[in-house]
Length: 250
Image (cartoon, rainbow, N blue to C red; front, top):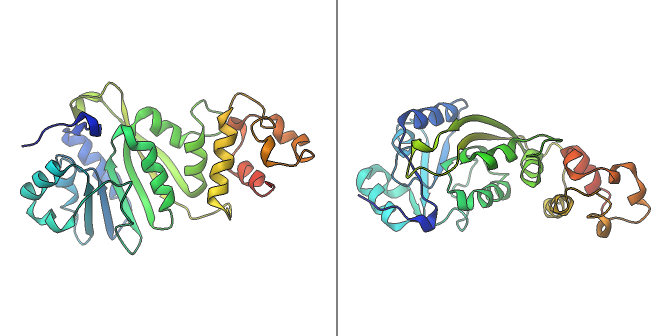
């Protein structure tokens, strides 16, 4: 068997119905390559290995879990990557789908990794702490709308699918979880400099209660700051609004 490691934020999924629901969402669209992030005890992996005619890989940082998975699923041995999703290179040379029950302590970083790999990831089906899942999918004007919302929705269509109760895990977390889908939509807003876009959005939400002319003062000429849009707060701007600002940045 295996042990739970709190240092890795491990909460292992044990509810079959949740695994079936995730697999059902995953199968809504065809794909040829699949990466599972953090298979842990293999509850979801068991279902993923039954998907026919795909190339499957799984990345797991915990050596003990890698040994357990290799022994439990012999067909998985050559497909296991013993490392962190945050440290590996893209595991496929062609577009792929990503799925996982993500550790809460690195879930935001995983979203940024998905954004980094946006030219390769067709879809992401992920389980997050519900609060984080809601932020990724939130729209302008919502209290949940923020950095993750804007950056994710610039390149992906996001949808919140279903809640997952704490008792579906071992050990049960102290919070609800939620499963979301991020579907790649390319670069519909024509963002030319992603890193500059990230800096803009982070700066805008760094002082989210203030009018934009305060946090964004260093990035625009004084004459620009008199525009009406700078009287708004970050949470009032759509993705298109942020891209418009990006095109006027110094």
